[in-house]
Length: 135
Image (tube, rainbow, N blue to C red; front, side, top):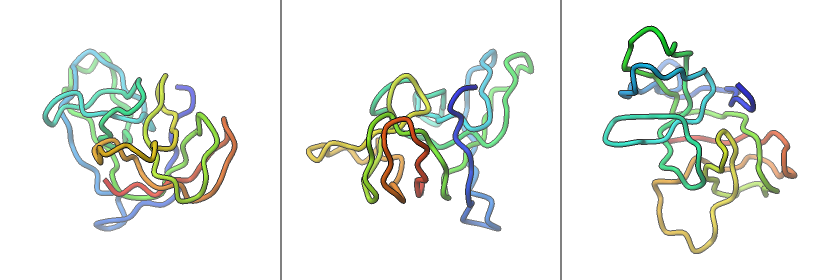
C-alpha cells in the first residue's frame, strides 16, 4: 500500500494505542497503516475522501479472503502520515483524497468528527508529518 501510516509511539492501556474493533466488509483487504473512516455505526472502511469521519489507523493486516468481518484500529498515539499540502505545527488535521493523506482543517469548520489529530511539526506538501491522534 502506498503512503501507509506508521506508528511512532503508542499511548493508552499498556501503551497499546487503545485498539478498537470495528465491523468491516468480508471480502475487503485492509493493510496495516490504512486510515479508516466510519462508514456507518461501528463499521469502518478505508478512507478515500476529504473530511471523512476518522475511526483510526488499521493496527494489523486484514485479508480479503479470510471472511473476517472485524478490523482493529489504533486510536491513541503519535503516527506519521503524508501531508497532501503544507501543514503548520499545531494545525488540526483531516483526511484528504485519495486516501492516507492529511490536510489542515479550515478555520470555519465546525465538525469535530473529522479531526484526525494535531500536527507535531511544520512540513511541506508530500512530506511525512507526525500527528498526535487521540480519537
